[in-house]
Image (cartoon, rainbow, N blue to C red; front, side):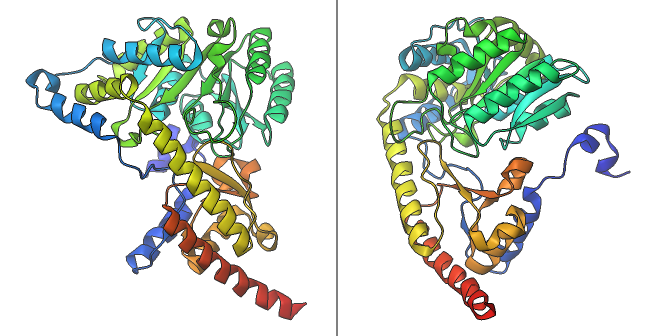
Length: 401
């Protein structure tokens, strides 16, 4: 019996990134220095005061006991305080907030809590894979909506909600968007909440990149909309804001019915994050926030260097206004290849790794995602290599014409 014989495994689509990751591993084993923009894995260190709180707490004997599945009270209060300061949203830490082992796990656990076999969930395409796969693994059915802009997605939701049989139980939003870096104003959420209420759906908002923005006003929360908690929960995380991806600290906040269901299911699955990690997470939220501004500035500088240097190399990459990604159309001469084959050729020819857009859904296939997780020197090095690669491709094409 192979792994593919199991029901849940059979329901999963092929993991598109695997083909590219295998090539990356093979090249690195050969000693090739791959400049890796593929995975959105923060390379910046977690702020020192957070690490110190982790170490301080870890040596206390009580810390090594089982923790609280829904999150220690101090951490849930810290998250409530953050939402009050940042968004002007008041939440009850006892009934409207659950701490999860990262936002990805929060989404997956929420899907398990609310999805019955055959339930329809509306998800954007392209989008972060767990937005769809979490519900597929829970037995649900995904209605993918093409989402090259927030307006297109909202229009598609309205149409899908009217025509889906059975009617959808929930819709997913993600802004600032992963992978496309799109952003929205509060009016978008007002329309989305109205739509969810009209069609008796829940609205599940992913805000993992809420603190990584470069121009204009900070991204809003759906929970700022009057009456949003009637139908909405928001998923958030400390992974990107404080470079704490390995700590695995996320949150689900909002609608009490959904929070209660999530907490019940989660209590059967895990005991929560290590207590020292939860205490350190509370210190992150309650402590000095200059580190967040510094992180934001670092990503902005990287974005500016990447967009400018790649343009000079011959690849115009749109400038993202938020998130830690650039969402780039394939260069014209490679559009016929599709994103997976282009990503492989870029790695072999320029020693640059990117994430193929097809891994985020069929409508992402004309793009690649470039993560801002290499320093400015490495980005410039990548641009020089990219220029040589593109010139090497252009020469044979010119000779053929």
